[in-house]
Length: 121
Length: 220
Image (cartoon, rainbow over all chains, first blue to last red; front, side, top):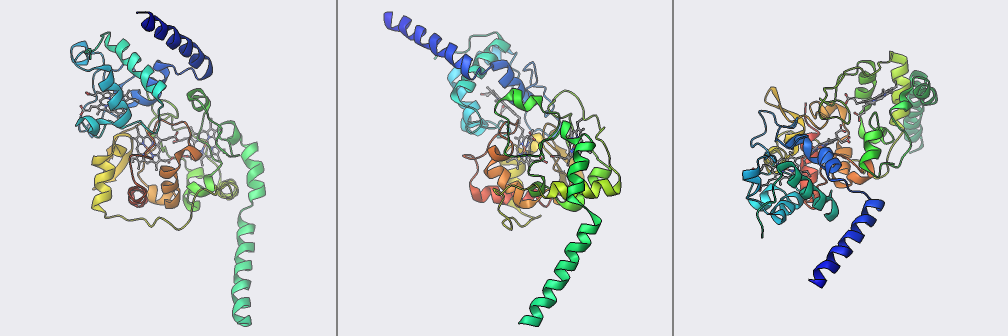
């Protein structure tokens, strides 16, 4: 328990530092990189969803579907792209574009959009 | 040897003089300021953007490597008749392109194009990419195995396919320098450090980047 609390304190401390230095804002990162396909509200209705897109991006507001995914699974698909989890290559990998902190705040932001805790590991 | 040399040198100088009579890069630089172009475009490298806010503050694309990116004839023509390149408004994913870019007269366009073509990046290696229209592997990479077509319009059998968030790649064969396309895929951080397009460094091999660049460079 003590170790657990210690960890929280450390993470919080780091969190404030990171916020001061780089301020990765989940909503801003989402709107800039992801909304072009997933839509500003995450409904899977961005401007790239045309009749030419062979698969529809996930609706992040669908709590039932989103609850089937763990946070780790989401972080993996964001980092390595659809094919890494046997899904469509139209979901790009962002490994060379986003750092771990940005990927983490994205996962948190998507959890806000679905208002769901996600599948626990 | 001597007569051959001078017979080559003379026409080259004559050509250079003729070009100077037609377009004047010094005049182009002054015009670029007078016409207010620098309010939306910066012309001094290297790239300045470090954060998403920096990118969103821009009201037009950076032009400091215009001479490495564009083809001169396209540039002269476009400045006189600027047709939309990005389907959507610059830095927006909700609004359509307002289609209101300032247009120039022929002499101003020639002078400014001459000035812009002098702005180059030494990161772009010349003579590497030869446009290649029919390449099944590259076509699969572009449209199926990679999401390029999800964000870019491109020509496909007499119609236009693709998504809307990136600049249209229709007409890339006249607009873009093939070598720049490869340089941009290989080292995007030099040209556009903060952009909505993913970086493909660990996704595509350099060979695949060259294949895709050659394929895109042939788009009509």
